[in-house]
Length: 76
Image 1: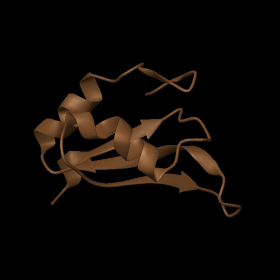
Image 2 (image 1 turned 180 degrees about the vertical axis):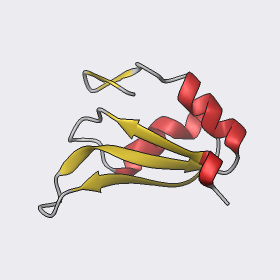
Image 3 (image 1 turned 120 degrees about the vertical axis):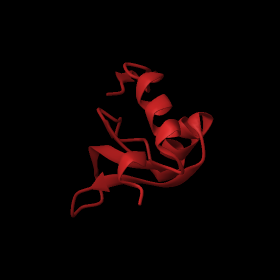
């Protein structure tokens, strides 16, 4: 159902958690879920996923923040 509404985000600073990721992307639409991927020691792998309620919101989130800098690192 949400296949076209998922956004892959990489180059995240290790300090960004699920809550902060949601805060960053809520401005583009309704965030259904978001998840930072972590290793077995609970350290961020530097990427995550954000799922929006509509594909349109996901497309806006992809086009607007591309190369936006968060905590000194550009988002991809």
